[in-house]
Structure formats: C-alpha cells, structure tokens
Amino acid sequence: MEVLQNLVCPQTKCGFALAISANNFKLIFCYEGPYFLQPGDTLCTAQFGLVVNGKISSLAIIHIFPHSIAFWSLLRDKLACPGNREPFSGECALFHMCQLEICPWIGKSK
Image 1 (cartoon, rainbow, N blue to C red):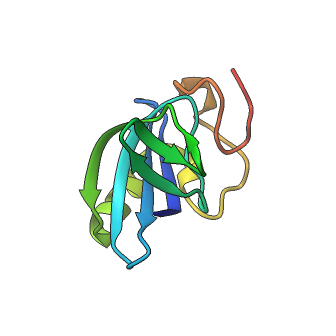
Image 2 (cartoon, one colour; image 1 turned 90 degrees about the vertical axis):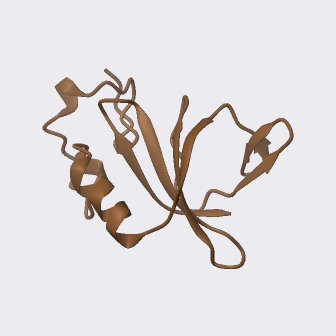
Image 3 (cartoon, helix red, strand yellow; image 1 turned 90 degrees about the horizontal axis):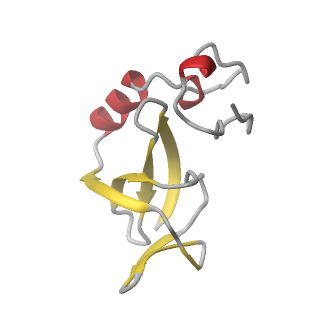
C-alpha cells in the first residue's frame, strides 16, 4: 500500500494515514510510534509486524478503518494540528500545547 495523505493528533500523539493498495482499495490507519508516515511511504504487513519502505517498523497499528471521504474530512477538521490543513503556512499557534516531542511539519522540537 502507498500512503496518500497523513494527519497528526497533537493531543494523543497518534497519526492517521490514508493509504491505497495496488488494486485501488483505500484504508485509513490509526497508529502510534516514534515517527509519522508521509505521502509516498509504502506499507506492507509481515509475520513480524509492519514494514515501511522495505524496513521493519516500530509503528503500532491501533485501528484500521475503511476509507470514506466523510470520515477522512471529519478527522482533518477535528484534529487541532494546523499542519493537517493545506496549504500549511509553517506557523503553529498551538505549538506550546502540543504533546508531540518534535513537530512532524516543521521539524522543531520542544
């Protein structure tokens, strides 16, 4: 599967990735881990876990949802992170309240 879009929840430190399979089946992954998936990343599962871009990953899948435009839009609109909206200006008024150690959008750490 290939990641098409991603979202971040600064309160829970979870990521959401919209991915598409080779036969155009779309899924939404809710996950947590030390980094966030980016558009263009490739995902596959193996007996030992999730493989991202050909490497074993430390990401933990929390839930997988079937894709719906309405659900993805709801996630994008409800998650407070300004990086989830396009275009991202590079400014974050919520940085002081964010629970993420490093901002996935600007790379700035607390």
